[in-house]
Amino acid sequence: MISSRLLQIAMLVERNKVVFDVGSDHALLPCFLVQNNIARKVYAGEIAEGPLNHVKETVKKNNLEGKVIPVFSDGLAKAADDVDIVIIAGMGYHTIKHILDSCEVERYQYFLIQSNTDVDMVRRYISDHCYTIEDERVVYDDFYYQIIRFSADYHEPYSEMEIKYGPVLLKRRDEVFIAFLADSLKRLKEINERANKKEYDEKILEIERLLYN
Image 1 (cartoon, rainbow, N blue to C red):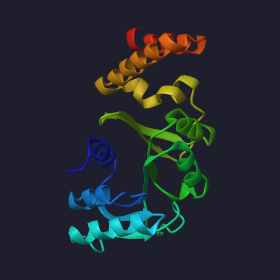
Image 2: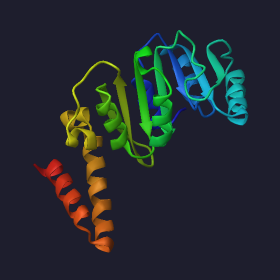
Image 3: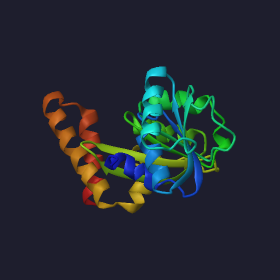
């Protein structure tokens, strides 16, 4: 069984498409997508031989040759022409930015991004390029992760609040998002007790307004 984080990513994949999973990490998600008839085919990309061998072992173990295809690739450099959807998950913002800068974003139907750092910078990147955030999820899996689905369709730049907290998340305000805000508020208050900086005070007030107004 895959983690809650990967499961939420899988739920955002449109059925019967071809997927490229960048940095596939043992190909757990690609195998799940194929085994559950979500994706028609998944390319599992890795930039190093060691991780790629792990992908090959997982594919062989699950008898998914031809359905989950290991690819030695720096980002999307070796992506096949039939790829519809790109998943970039479990990396930091700067690595994600490098991958996006190095590919033709318009070539793909949409991207699923889960950044381990600076999620607001991912949204700022999307906003600066006038791309469209189609969906967002927050999932708790020993940590709060944010997942963003975006396409190259035109959208006017997002507001600062939308960049910080997510346009879809702000509108939906589901239970996990509220819990994430509450957790963020608690952590900020703990930090501010030690640091006592004005910037933390402003951030605390901002989150409190989101939670209680």
